[in-house]
Length: 334
Ligand SMILES: O=P(O)(O)O[C@H]1O[C@H](CO)[C@@H](O)[C@H]1O
Ligand SMILES: O=c1cc[nH]c(=O)[nH]1
Image 1: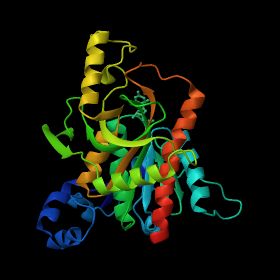
Image 2 (image 1 turned 60 degrees about the vertical axis):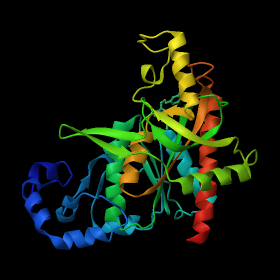
Image 3 (image 1 turned 90 degrees about the vertical axis):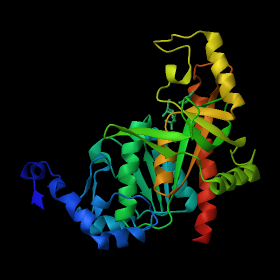
Image 4 (image 1 turned 45 degrees about the vertical axis):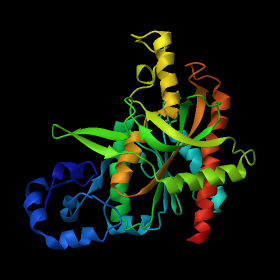
């Protein structure tokens, strides 16, 4: 495999590798055997012959060091904003009683990339995914490769987010039963090589139920308020894509907007956000357990504007608390 010197000058090791991959992969039944034993499904066979892989957006490189550092990961918690996931990192550290060496602070592992902020707290990764499916898709690709290269076993992913509610009181935690697109299809669609690729987005029923049960057990205690499950509409935009009247553009009227939101409610959609489709689509495809847990900031049947910053900051902590309870219970059994 050929080294690219220009990349080495910038401190990153990239390798020219692409041309020789397909024929090697197709003929190698050792690779098929190795992949058949993985719990991650549908993993790219080309990875098996990729000696070096730089996970560009999280600034990590496939190596023995990476395997040792990440092999204990059991939970990957993701949310939109870097500050929220830094806060969650501190919160989960206290909750699971994880001790950093004296004098060592939590470090953003991916600082060099300046794209995502990622923290490792023992068996938990806390990382921000930015806004929308393209952003979370890149991160999921690199995180799935990370847990594969590190040989992690039995990993669960969570999206800990915020959303707009549909007929539910602000502050409600919605655990997604299935993510749907703007046409109410439980499918994540992506154009690949000029064709539409479709991945199913129904969520793991058992995991949804376990989280709802924990929610019910702690409801109105320890900062965990109303918890419910329902379908989540995943939009590609915050304004027109979510039927708002307050975007820069709006070619529909208030009645049409309300008609659509009522139709959402009648189709058991309880919330609207922007990543659940890709998150559940890719993780389902990989056979990785995953759940989307979002707190509602506004009831869209009553308005569009998301206001009151302090209250939203309090609301954002509700999914933290629920997920932390789940992680703590699981760690007792591991
Ligand atoms: O709060 P997060 O996790 O970012 O989630 C929601 O908030 C963002 C829009 O404001 C979108 O990313 C949407 O999915
Ligand atoms: O209404 C909302 C609130 C938060 N995030 C969204 O995507 N929509």
